Length: 314
Figure 1: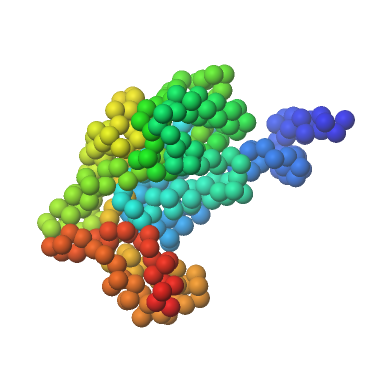
Figure 2: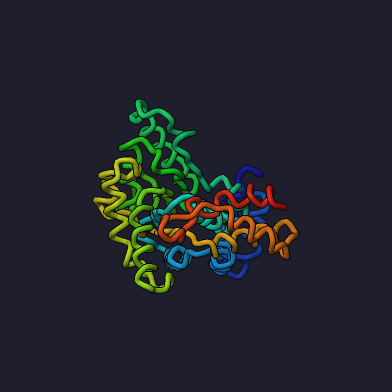
């Protein structure tokens, strides 16, 4: 009897609208299904993006808009595929973490949020054929278990060539692949590929005297796409995923100025209970390396080394 109780409760949940909330709460009290753990909060995601991600108005707006639009669509015709690009320390991994945190109740520890790092999961270029089968099987299995699965691929520039294209059948507009409904999944690719094109446009914008916030998504979408597609170490080099226009948005992360770095320092100091240490903010900001040599506008490591430098100057 106990074995069929979850199924009975789920049936009652679907058939009895007035009692929906009560039965859902009871069902989820002992179920580990992704429907129970899936608790998206777009408002909290937007707040966290604007509170904790500095100098990235394009990423903040694009991620908020695309995720909100995708989740509001009860029957999307394809998954949401976001590709994050920019130099190190600009917030790409942070944004992917915030996304996971605000989609599932158990945040990034959810069994339905899957992270891949090439150097850990796909270390050998000679085993691409094996990795392709394993990745296809892994994605298929997890989508079968949870249609709302989130797949995050970090350090795409270290991905063996041709491996990621095995995902193509899962990313297109077909309704079902391998008998699995996959259209509600979210994929995030994270890469430094395209950083030169982004850096060049931001520098040109600055030298022309234009405000950084005047840069629009359309200024960088095609530039980043072409740069990534033609970059042999992008993980998406000559990829059929790009050829078939299966990436929903290329999200550019702009290089950070000293002002942005110092905001990172201040935020981390506040987390340590030392918000008022202006001396540390100044010291860390001044100890970073900036380029180009003619202007020293942008931090070469973004905010990546901020935590270590704070510990040194405190």
